[in-house]
Amino acid sequence: MDKAIQAITEPRRRDILHLVRDEELTSSAIASHFDISAPAISQHLKVLEEAGLVVVRRAGTKRFYGIRREGFAELMQYIESFWDHSLLRLKEAAEEEERRKHGNNEQ
Image (cartoon, rainbow, N blue to C red; front, side, top):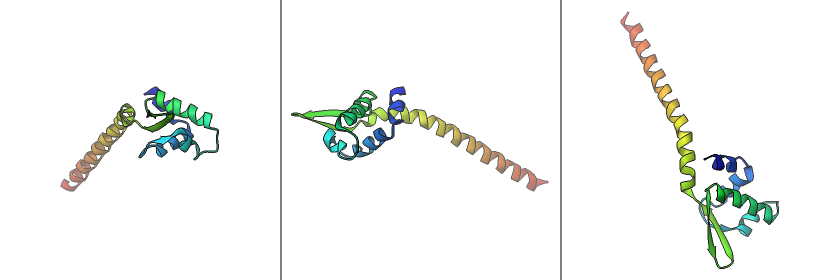
């Protein structure tokens, strides 16, 4: 999970993930969306691949990059643990408020 977090801290990598979210693209097609060199894009792709967030499919001399949804599972669970805790606290606060309202009405 640490590698995934580190990988997505860089804005260009997040942009790359958006590009390959719905379709596979070659590194050159990805690079065409940026104003940095193709080797720099390749470095970003390597980081994303090592973090388990993209998968590479080779077809002849071309490499196609696509999202690896499984790579986000642990990260999602981590984030959801905060959300679940917050929702529980919100539920408890709402229930406490409801108890107070009913307590004041009975007096």
